[in-house]
Length: 296
Ligand SMILES: Nc1ncnc2c1ncn2[C@@H]1O[C@H](COP(=O)(O)OP(=O)(O)OP(=O)(O)O)[C@@H](O)[C@H]1O
Image (cartoon, rainbow, N blue to C red; front, side, top):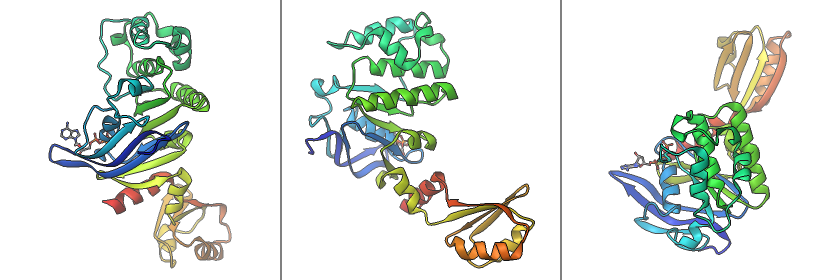
């Protein structure tokens, strides 16, 4: 156990039904850090969070919250949780739900603060059950903030939120992190991981296939994408050495290659009218697919 970690999995394995959902996973989260857990459906993200929350027990290895077993009441008081299924009572209003959750804590955040942070002031009188999916997510976020958590677990938190709500949510997360709160986030929105995460863990088939910064993930993909407006056909460019694939979108040509320099020379030599040239590393989605593909 690492005493400085706010949450930790040590060599954790867990079977779920016939599936080895986690297989020897080590993970440690520090104070004030945003850790995004990424990976395809069924990779084991929710299982990892459930183990850290003490909702599941590991078959092998150990889970810790603030250096204690996750079931410890003292440790649980220090966390806030937003899971995929909230199971909240349908009959209560948003204000009543918040009052109920605030009552669990000795020094809760005020109703005004919680509502402002989650952007739900106008929803307080409404019955929770009558809210839209995105509004319910914002209320769940408010509930997770009631106990002034030092560690927030957010399992796909912005599913169903509109763009403005998502940006407000990201802004609030940054404020909380600025005050020292740590966050474990799972998401399928890569721009969300990019916007928030200090560190990313990529799970594939129950194993941690990669851990590092977003930039480090990108660096794993050696391919570059060349984009330009050109009269050359995709077939002509496909025949250049070092070209992996070519696609055309209207007047734009997109070329994937591990070696952009020789390809650029050939493109410029073959088309004197070529313009709007840009070269960039292949995208984050492609990098992740390559990490999880290799792991599989
Ligand atoms: N209650 C269960 N009984 C049997 N198998 C389960 C159960 N819950 C999860 N699994 C299996 O364990 C594996 C890991 O599931 P988990 O929910 O942790 O994945 P995930 O990465 O969170 O996926 P998603 O992105 O779809 O939420 C999957 O193969 C899943 O089918």
